[in-house]
Amino acid sequence: MNSKVETTLNEQIQKEEYSSRLYLAMAIWCEVNGFPGASSFLYEHADEERMHMLKLVHFVNDRGGKTQLMNVEVPPQEYDSVLDIFTQIKEHEMFITESINNLYGVTVDEKDYTTGNFLQWYITEQVEEESLFNTILDKIKLVGRDKAGMFHIDKELEGMTGGSPAAAE
Ligand code: FEO
Image (cartoon, rainbow, N blue to C red; front, top):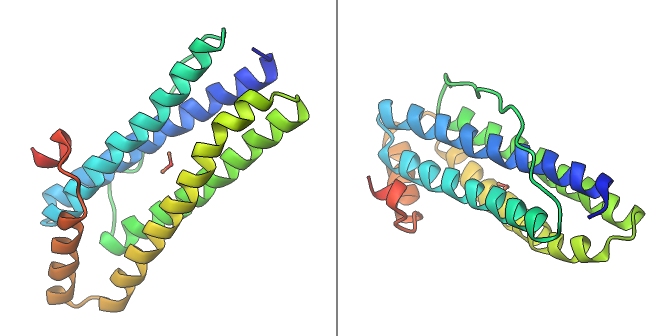
């Protein structure tokens, strides 16, 4: 495997691992602050990020490279509100989209079309994730500090979970 591509893929693995930890920290905050729906949704999303990471890990290993795990930061563990959390998620996902686009750029520069083709899945996934989080954030902004509205959104987030083991606990 092209070493520049491999290094950049390993960096993306680290970012996906961090994303999973970040959403885990956010799920924990929601769970202890009375937002069970948002918590389930975020536990499930932490699992999804782990899946994003594993897909990259297997790709690197299957293509003759070797995944190098790196240090993963401890994410923030205190948040002001659910609005604060989803605002930060949106920013984080925009950062991940930029990172995937840069990674794709490396595969183009290095003429590694196989990896570029593999990354198409991530490019599509980022479009979907940004759209999903924009929709949720818009709804949260709409209810503002209204407790009844927030209760309703929390229920809606509960309904958006697909019933993964982590979300169901
Ligand atoms: Fe792995 Fe939410 O992007």
